[in-house]
Length: 227
Image (cartoon, rainbow, N blue to C red; front, side, top):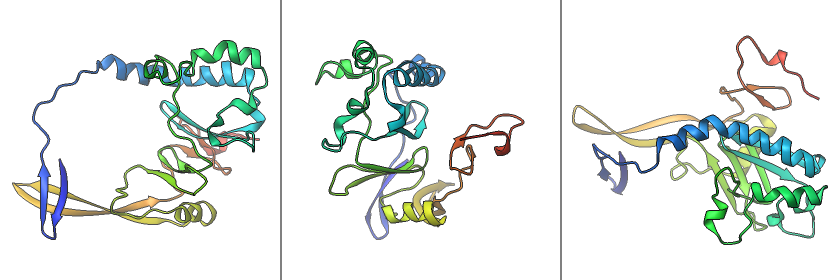
């Protein structure tokens, strides 16, 4: 159900249809879940580690089929340079980049090719608390893209300072989501308060250096080591 406030006490409500059609084969969704992590690691170890200077690349955060990297590139070029300045084996890069990256400029079919990579977002700086919880400054005018899963940013003002304060001082920012709910044919407005920005991450094991590790049966944070 979706809603839009049109006056102080009136809402325009659109109910979800009882029936819907899906033209995307279920095999696509299952393929992503089954193979995304494998192809993810295949790209990192069989391409990045072989032809890129990994001392100039830092992994920030990732999700099922995405990864965000900080790159120490050419200071004389803008933030759209991607990996160009950190290639250490140009021959290997040129021979294999076509299997991952777009090779035909402006060709959406080439950009979206099976098992290929596409640029989701890029900018000058990124601050990440967890997967799907980050901010990217998108240009030199300090405009930013904030991703905060579970928080309605139309009704909650989220700023860079709040994210930085959470990282530096552990400060928690409360957020309130408003929505309409229906029970026994009675429509009501619900307000739900939650921790919008917090250093607590309960979906993974978080180490002292803020690295996130997967839950594994029988293991705790003390069982992981890092350098």
